[in-house]
Length: 456
Image (cartoon, rainbow, N blue to C red; front, side, top):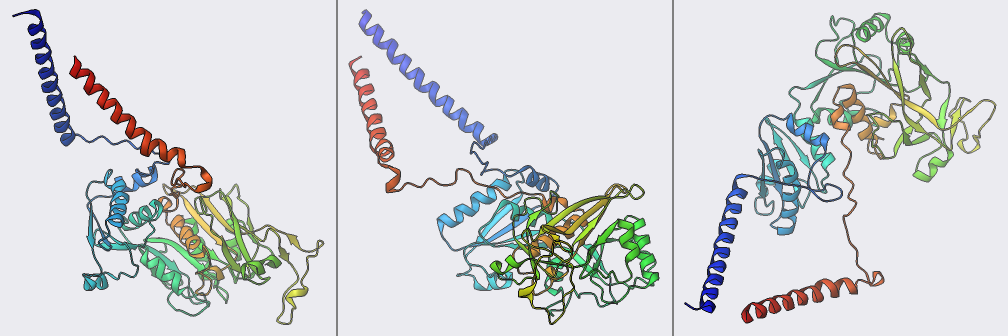
């Protein structure tokens, strides 16, 4: 055999060896891909993974989660839903996603209570379910999972018998809508007779004092004070500076209610009157963390509190209103002309005015928490639909109940979400480079490589 044929045989063997080796590598990689899964999110805003707060919620959930998407047979829409849920499935593999076309199965949609079109989700966990309406966010879905993961119903005790706001009726000044939201979120409402109740601490998440109209009896005040002594949590909503017999409770937590009414003439810009204060500045606290929604408070009061060495209270302002307004110390009357109300620098207090407080102290393992708001109207059936009123109220209740995770999940902000190419953005070089030059270059390189090998 001459040298030329021997050389050609060696090249042929090398080529076959290389092909065989490549096939073995491909087969091995294919096998490994079925046995092991590696995922890495390289997007700037981590859009394909969930936050640490969401991971914590998922890891504490025991058992499967069923998610049913009522969506039309739109491939793009369904793929978007799959991609969104896949972020959670990578951490919790027993999250099951299924689709139902509401147009083809209207009875199933009606039985599930579907109201929205285009992908409403029904999330079910341990025989409890909630709905999620698009557009979805990580914050919303994780909050749903957190609420569903509660192993027992949180009990809320309502002070009653003194003209308090009702949590079950739909009168304009009552809290029927807010009460329904609490029950939907896993809370149960109870109105025990505090006078005869022997143990206020048993299974109660908190006591709600919703602006009584008549004085609370000394016996009830003593029971409430004992409840505080035992580490009980309280949500106290005030309508005015009259504490209606609860002065001892205010003194216990260091609360002071200023005389006067918060006013702001610029409220007219937001559709309110001078006696409506709008909240846009919030304190650095779990209740208001990442809270950026405007809230409204009709006839709000200025409140302050100071921690005491004896009781160990820590105080944090929650809501500041009327940055351009003031605390009007002159009493209003039905005959008052609101247009003639002016700021008196000798008597009135300039804004911003704080109208909500979070008070807490160390007590046992969980600690003790109190929230006081110098306004009850913001949770009434009339005002709860305004801006972020409902969200703020739920945040307060969740914090008092110890469910900090529900209000600590920040919304995901997409930094690299869109690339808008317009005529003004000079997109032609991008189009020519990727649509013409790059494919043409690859084609020329392939032909050149083939021709070189053929000549060899």
